[in-house]
Image (cartoon, rainbow, N blue to C red; front, top):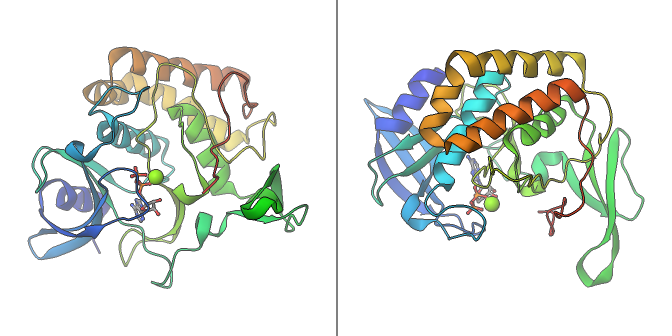
Length: 275
Ligand SMILES: Nc1ncnc2c1ncn2[C@@H]1O[C@H](COP(=O)(O)OP(=O)(O)O)[C@@H](O)[C@H]1O
Ligand SMILES: [Mg+2]
């Protein structure tokens, strides 16, 4: 079994071989294998050179934001982001590398990891929460829903902390990062995070305004301590100083408010299409 530390080492220093390009990606997002000392792991490689420029994020910074998102998830102890590292060297130059999440049975990943879905209007499955009513393909009335699930609740909290501007259903996966690891719920595509401005845009609004579960709140409080210990200096290697300062403010605000946020106005709070 490859432990998390070893896995990160393979991703960061192993030889990268490109296997293909992910077609539903908006950037040059490549499927690759990283190999080190006989250990091979599947991964996503996003070279900075392949980043599509965005008006609201500085050029060439998206890959480092993804690594910063991993660091926050890891400091929370929540395992929501697959191991993600920064590499200076790769076939297309510097970029981020992230462990690949395979579906539990090795087959196709269900949309939204089986936890986020679009159903016929009002057909909310038992134990699921309604997010919004909308119109799907051809004007069909639909409802966006997600499971009332503990991992997804933590993902919602995580998105608030990292100020995720793009939590689509398609960025929720369920599977394992290497054959022996546990099946978990993972989030991917954290390039548009840590903005100085409030940009939370997510499909996970099912708990808006509710109090945070006590255990999750305790972890967020502990994260504030981690920031004082080593997380802040790690984030400073990856983000602008003001972005790190804002992150501290968001953590403080969440601890004080102790509740899931409500969608704001002035910034579109739902990604659409939702997948
Ligand atoms: N670590 C991963 N494991 C498995 N599938 C992934 C992983 N990262 C991305 N994907 C899949 O590839 C798609 C495109 O990747 P994404 O990170 O969203 O790229 P982009 O930044 O170009 O939108 C995702 O929607 C997801 O289906
Ligand atoms: Mg994407």
